[in-house]
Length: 146
Image (tube, rainbow, N blue to C red; front, side):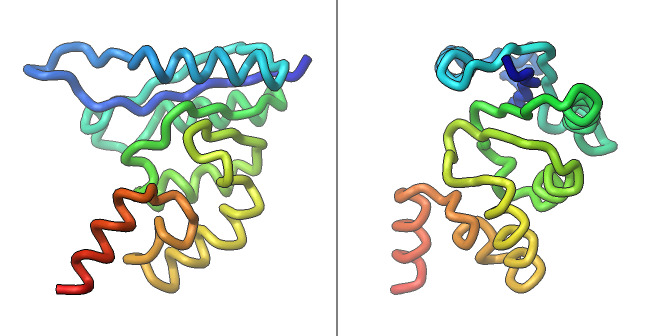
């Protein structure tokens, strides 16, 4: 059985309340662990805006993956899809990963398309990675037509 490390990046709750992991993210994680026969060994959580120094829990999660040769599992990409630092850290770690809401995003597509695309044209970063959903694409196309 392969090992897995999960990572959640959450938005801060209203009035600085503790962030809560959405049930659908937990369910997606549970389903993926069963489907891919992975054993969860650790979970890490970063909260947007909580740390001024970046994403310390992401760094810890990736270090745990490298140390134990585990798969990095993230149920929901969310705002991270617009964060080149996130993709750069993921790429440099060289670990296997699964982003459950973006199954087409693999280590190969990240390295070949992602960072190259970002450096060439930061505005088209998400589009070239194939991580924009249909609503985002429609909104961009509507803006271009005006």
